[in-house]
Each structure stands twice: as structure tokens, then as C-alpha cells.
Image 1 (tube, rainbow, N blue to C red):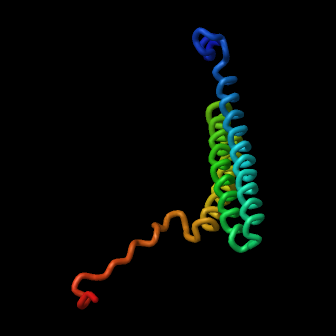
Image 2: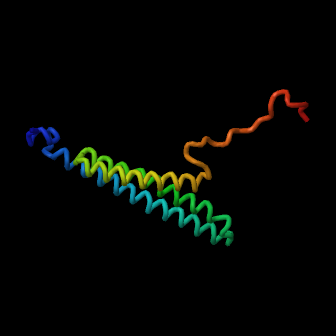
Image 3: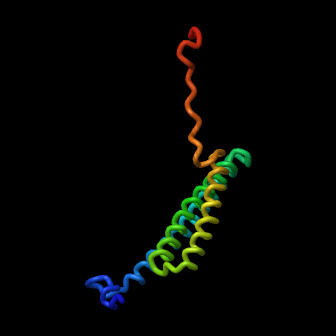
Length: 140
């Protein structure tokens, strides 16, 4: 059995569990802020571009990419917060199972957004730079 003193940070008297909970909550807040600020910034850029050009086809794809990137980064922070709280604070079989489902859903969302933004699967490399084969014929 761990004594109460051993579960506290030396010198400050704050329980480690509370620090871990606060860290998880901070990461959740950071994730929400990243999504909100990123979506807001993408919307402002979209509105300015549309106001100047009045061509929705030119400003909509970058807008979608901006919002998608904000969501992807925000999801990373949210998953980190969930992992810290679940594994470090209350690692029961049920809580780890719930965490696995949450991470599975968020991973699916991340992969879906990545495919939508990049137009390819995350594990596919970028298209290689094409170059002419040596000896394929005379250069013109």
C-alpha cells in the first residue's frame, strides 16, 4: 500500500493524481482551442478570399484544408489528454477499453481527414519525382 506522502510531489504537497488530471484537462483544453482557433482563422481567410475574388471554387478547397488541419491537430491533443487521464490515473480494464474505443474512433476520423486533405492514404508516399530513364533515347 502506498502511503499518502509517497503519492504527493515532494516539496509542494500536491497529489500526483491531481497533477495528472490537470495535465489531461490542459491537453483537452488545448485541443479544443486549436480546433476553434484554427477553424476561425480558416474562416477569416476564406471570407477575405471570397470577398476579393467572388470565386467560391478558388477559396473553398483551401478553406476545407485549413479546417481539416485544425481538426487533425486538435484531435491529437484530445487523444493525448484521454491517454494521460486513463492510463496514468485509473488504469482499470473498463477504462482502458473505453479509451481504446475513443482512440479507434478518433484514429478513424484522423485517417479520413488525412485522405480527404491529401488525396491519398497516410501510408502512401508522395508521388516520386519523375525523371527520364538513362539511355531511353536522345535528349532533345
